[in-house]
Length: 192
Ligand code: GLN
Image (tube, rainbow, N blue to C red; front, side, top):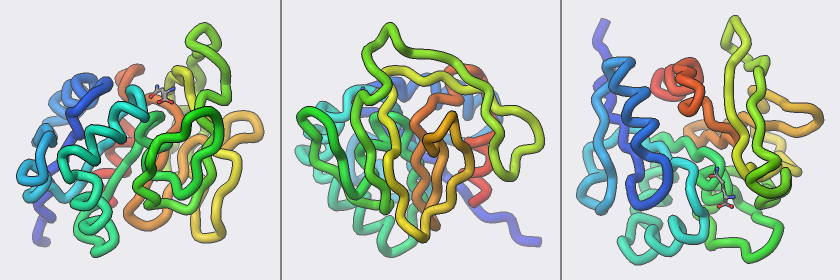
């Protein structure tokens, strides 16, 4: 059987991109830091990490990566996983104070900083579809997904909120599995 060639890009403009690189290195997955449109070219997958969504959004616009990502994603030549700030950036609708410009890639509404401030960050163990054991993840000044469109699959909930969702080639996570050395979600994403 032919194996699919996968190159996983990690957007490395701001935020915790290094933890994703360390996790993927431990999984022996080849990664490419993405800082320019050229860096994105050979990528089949892109992780948009957590960080500060307003800052990342401004840097996406100034590098032209915003248009490059949306074009490739709409052409289905790129899969994208947005984590926390990244989830905010891929959502079609952002609520809360000072919403950044979004890439509008997945039909969800997300409320920025809705869990409260840094002190209200927490760890959780999640039941995730397609994973046969509990998944560890941290929520850090996390946003809350308040609405999902009809074509969005909810893979995990925490309380009454969806926390891992997917529609086709776009994934959004409001939690950080990479901060708990949790490989399962990255594995699912790369296999998709
Ligand atoms: N609170 C941040 C924002 O709104 C996201 C936090 C995170 O990425 N862990 O941009």
